[in-house]
Length: 337
Image 1 (tube, rainbow, N blue to C red):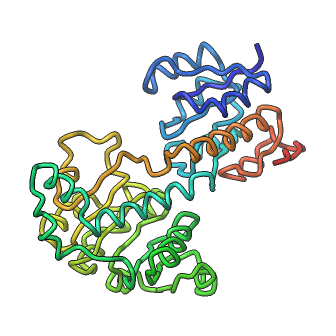
Image 2 (cartoon, one colour):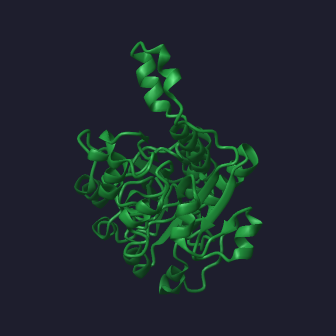
């Protein structure tokens, strides 16, 4: 058998076929959790590790001295100890645009479901109350409403497109990395003040990466207090970006009207988590990007990157290009995409 690739969880067959065709041995983890994975990797010594959302720690990298690549099937990198990987010359390859449409569509679904109180209506109607339809005066249409983006990257800009062209919403945004002109090209009116954007929006979308010590608690009590009492908050990025206890309080007090959440402080969540019992919350289990199409795209892009790295080449879609300063990549060729 050739070099091994260790999958923390089983991947789509389209991605595994690429590995098999390249002569690599695909090993799917039998156990669950860091200790079990370390034990299996110490025995197998893989050249690459593939993960969807499970954490890849420094201890796991220690277990594989010959590790060349960590493949992340998706965009977020907060589950990988990036500093350690870069220091050791381990390329972290990822799929930065493969799930953008899936996440944007899920975000729009959350907006519609919250605006029409779908979860509440479904529950009461199934309980035998057909007349629930007469008590929906606090629901609203999206046309003519203002969507406020907090973060306007790949997913945020796709949401802006769908909201404006598909639903007739005005889109405003707050993003410290984009200029007024860049945001205008995306059809978004730039606000330089986050609180002014929050005050103006009927629906607030949080769409930014989790950068420890920087984007944590971007939305907390002060930000929630600035929102309209009729406004909705949608978070399909990372749970830690929104202060969950503050959000619970805002939902219970009526400071905001509702929330759609795909991400949480604690993942996996527990049945007793307070946020799951707050009024006017629609929740999904970090599944915004888990469509059939997105899973296939993520698997293929991630696997192609790992194949290139295992073959001793540099991959363009690497999470931290500083890894190429490591001596092991000096003079190496770039892979063709």
